[in-house]
Image 1 (cartoon, rainbow, N blue to C red):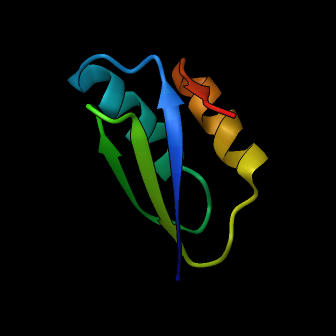
Image 2: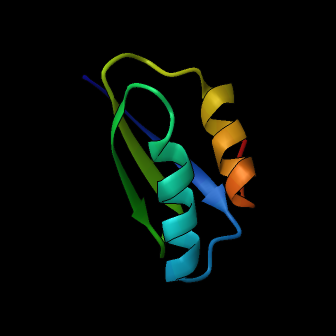
Length: 68
């Protein structure tokens, strides 16, 4: 298992959390997604390492931005 934490900007409510969780959860191999709204941190647990660009694309699809 691999766990990484990313900073996501633009999330302001529970709907935002749900959107990001839903999109990132769809990535093959992802086993858990935890979103901390106050800090904007998204912790992703997966079976194997996932490329940051894959995470970025999913966050973008949800309508938010991965902080660089």
